[in-house]
Length: 96
Image 1 (tube, rainbow, N blue to C red):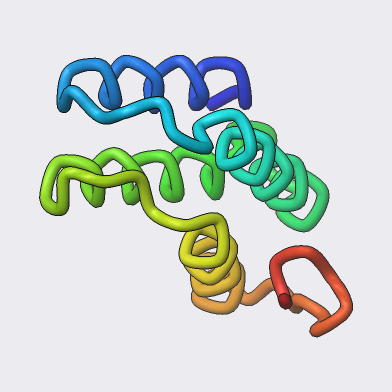
Image 2: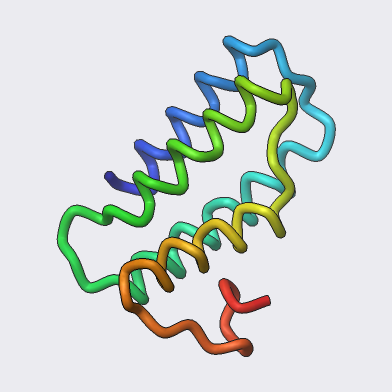
C-alpha cells in the first residue's frame, strides 16, 4: 500500500466517522512520517507495514471515535517491525 493510498483511506474513514479537524494537519504529517519510516525499515515491495498500521489507525477511529495520537501510531509501527524481525533503534522515529 502506498503512503498516498494509506492517507486517503484514513481521510475517508475520518469523514465517515465524523471526526473534527482539530490538529489534523500535524497528526497527518506524523502519520506520513511513520509510513515513510516503515518503508525505509521494511524492504518488501508491498509495504505491508504501511497497510498494517493503516488498518490499525482506521480501526482505532471506528472504535474510539478519535484519531490515534502520533505516538501511538509510532508505537504500533515499532510493534509491527519487531514482530516481523526488523530492528528499530531508539534513535529512529519509530523508536521514539
